Length: 255
Length: 338
Image (cartoon, rainbow over all chains, first blue to last red):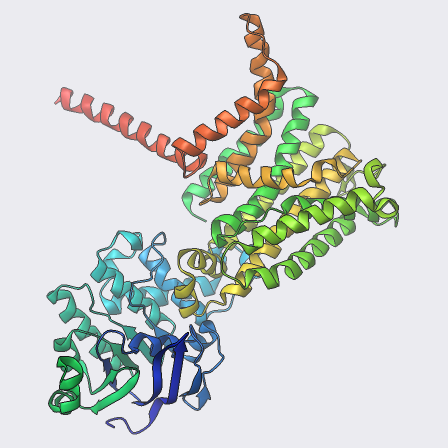
């Protein structure tokens, strides 16, 4: 692996939905400060991996270890607190809230005011509130959305909505960021911007794992590529190694 | 707090100060006091419905808990009215916590079902547990409230006090909304999955807001008990809970002001109807109070059909279009002058 230490380790991960085996003993190790892409045909179980790691689904068996912590059984918000951020395949922003408020929600994990304090003191008397806003602004600047701050998030085009989602995930200060098809539905210019953003995220010492179908993007940004088919890992390596792997060609093109 | 809310507060306070002089009749002051109780309960309910996306069909029961706690603790144990009010609020919050924990963990409207059942239980207890609650005969001789040694023994005094309580309740609610917690609640309403990914403990937040809304209802019930000095199970039936939900829905779910507008409208509507009935009689139309419910239903239907976002949103939209019209007229004149 290009990273020396692994930040996330999946060991024999299995998930069965009724009679359908979505993940069949997946083993995968993600190196620290790398960009890893998970690719594979539809139904290979890529998104299921994300949903297991972030606590939206419980694995049928197997282990998930993030920085020496076992993730099994933890609820999504706990996993966010541990430092795993994620985005969703179908953008899930809060459409009625402004772009800034969306990202401020991301600061939730790193702030603490509870019901009593919040009810008694108006926002302008709470220093934490100002801090949350300043931090959210800086993340919006980072993804390049500073000028859209006060717009309702639902009014933005899809490309920018995805950026809002990424900014919100970054605002929880993750060490590991899972991006579920960040480029799907984006035009080529937006895709280039997304690729650029992913690389800048890694420069901030954040490990990125993405599930993606856009091969150009995958090959350009990834340090490692993991190929899945039928709930298993069929190949793993640098983009170049994977492109030449006969098993990968079979998985994508058939026998 | 946004500028719009500050303007809202100014308008509300101005209305509260002007109304007694405008109506000048103890009966109508009483109606406005009851409207204040409804407002208070609806503010709490609106936090739950509009910001956490959950419906409670049992808020009448929390009002009953506040009222009975105040009534019983003051008359039977001789507690001070304020302590009794606090005790009632804590009891309501505790019960909300117990009801909320299992139901709010589930996605979907299980809270509505659970609270509906809970409301019926409380009503039955109020009617049947005659040794404790006095049954249908109720609790008599509940003492009046005193504020800083100042007895709230006239309607007008209680009127100002009740509306001051509404203003305080609004202030707390607005602070809550424009905070980390409020954003968390709105996030849950927007997308529960995304809220979880942002580190929000969705189940705990829903329980918390339910507990807060129960406290609002309980305080409103306590104030009611101290105002009428007598309580019986009558006003605390399930229909009252439904009425509260209707008030919030008619006013508009997506804003706290909607709860205030809805509570005011539906509290005052019966009076307005009987008022207009007088005029109808003059022009020779016989209007009977029986028709009230018909007109009432019709008005609700029209509001829900044409203003599905609620009366408050409709008022804002109406205000905006009038303002745009005014602007256009002014601009038109300027063009002519040039």
